[in-house]
Image (spheres, helix red, strand yellow):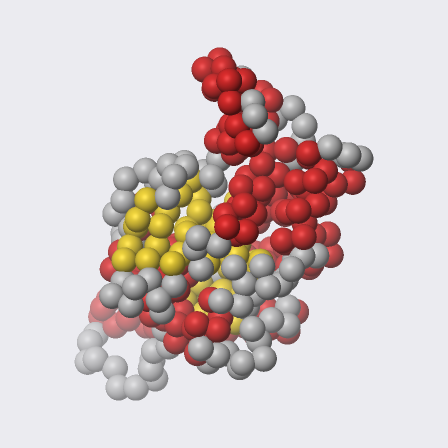
Length: 311
């Protein structure tokens, strides 16, 4: 499959996964890779954390988009923060309540109002994302979703509110967002896991839960943090004593990790029949633009190995 076909298969990619599996890093790599094939990408954070800005050496993200990356192909990545308070203010302004919105922001009551009904905060965020998707100003929206457990409730909020709200603007918004999430040409979920037992278990459970409860369409899953293969059975350095013992331990640990990650990747393929995209383990304590560019290149190569039918 060509990267262009993969990135234009839907206008929205929601990147989700268990905390600590590299979800935010993967979202950044996806956005950068899409920009490198000439697309304009809006990379959306839902929390005001330094994660995404650090990966692009940028300042804090705000509600309005800021440029994070530009490629010679003409593609670019713009970052923005979509928070429920800002989404609520914009919604009130659109409904003709600009003065009310201003007073609520001044009084600090926005959090209380948006939390009054369970699921409303998530719906407000998704409604803003839906608006951006409909406007079509970006070729692709990449959302760094909450960690897996919250991701399910986040994406399930429109269905829950559509059932409980019999009429009115909340029901209309919920139905509109559901229409987007249920349309494969408009949105897909990109799940991320490490090749370890617990993250793989959670990815499998999350995938089936999202399909059953929300009716979303899943993109190929990302297996992140794969150790590269090493030839460990060749000629060994001529060492003795403690150094030889340490070398034997290191070799056995690496073999054990290789066996374990191979077993988990095989199990994932067996229990969750979706194509895999693979990203390597980065042997560094700091991840910035250079490392994201490296991951983007690996991602493109992995996409190119997908058959055309798996769009």
